[in-house]
Length: 103
Image 1 (cartoon, one colour):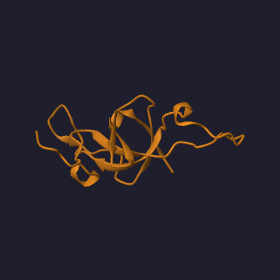
Image 2 (cartoon, helix red, strand yellow):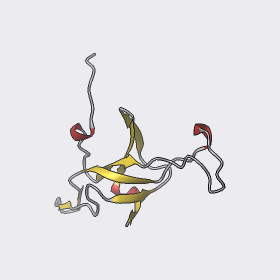
Image 3 (cartoon, helix red, strand yellow):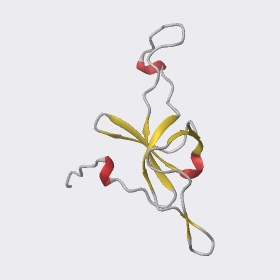
C-alpha cells in the first residue's frame, strides 16, 4: 500500500463540509494553574482552512456556504472528525455544526 502525503492544500472538502484549523487550548487556568494535557478540554474555536462547494438544494442547485476561508468560528464540541497533519490539528465538519462566526 502506497503512503499518501496530505497537507492543507491537498484536502478539498466535499458538499457542505469545512476544514477547520483548531485553535490552541488554554495552557493554564484563570488562577494561574498549569493544566496537563489530560485535563484540557477540546477547543471549540478554530479558523476555516478550506470550504466545500456547498450543499445541493432540492432542485439540484448549489447553496453557497455562509463561511469562507479565514473566518474564525465556534463549532459544536463533539462535532466532526479530528485530523492531525504534521503538528497541526484540524477538524472536518459539516457547515451545520458551526454555531457562530467569531469577530
